[in-house]
Image 1 (spheres, rainbow, N blue to C red):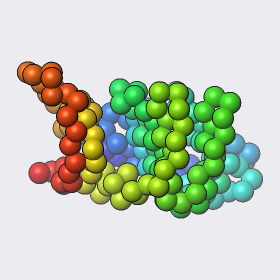
Image 2: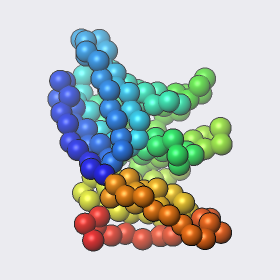
Image 3: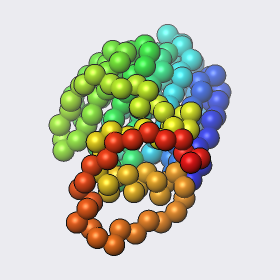
Length: 172
């Protein structure tokens, strides 16, 4: 139910969202790799000689120095990478895509789409804003459970597919 901010040995800053896990092994002068489960916002320290890699269970991102958000919760049925600054190469299986600032890559149902991103919505959680647009109640419940570390029961499961849009501070 908490989020945290960490600084890696190379100076990269990472904000971890609730129920997220970041693992890193020793960084070398030629390689920096972390493994992510959940969601994180990165501000990567630039090092042209040592690319920075973020690995999730379905994709690998390669960056030199940039800021981006990775949403890789398994229970949401999709992965979303949103680029704010710099360049990111995303490899999913044998497909490689490059993102420009203001773009998001969405991987769902074994399909990759690159769309214009609402960057404020993608990283609002870093500043304690819960921004959601047209998400199903089932995902909204899961996000609220993660943020507040509670269990929510839906008595009428018929409403799970209803979609919601809104913004609020997560302290409210």
